[in-house]
Image (cartoon, rainbow, N blue to C red; front, side, top):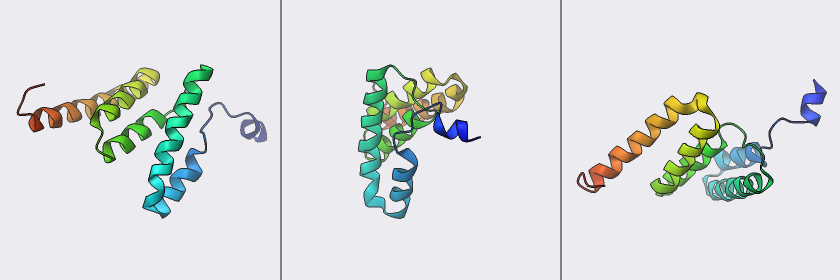
Length: 108
């Protein structure tokens, strides 16, 4: 069991501790977003596969800050990286598109 801890399959980039801090103090959620952005960039640069759920988490943070375009991009990356998330991510993407269409009066 300790071998799993010593050699994790995925790099989480301090996600758990930053998420916990954000739940305790909402002002720390920006730190979580910045940390996830840096982690995504590092993983992209190294060619490593992102841990499951982290693209979606970053997408949700973007959505909460009002950036639905970046949110949709992260949801798409989650879906493409983790095919088992396809149904859920496609639903989130469609909901975003529907909301954007309603805001713009049906024009895309």
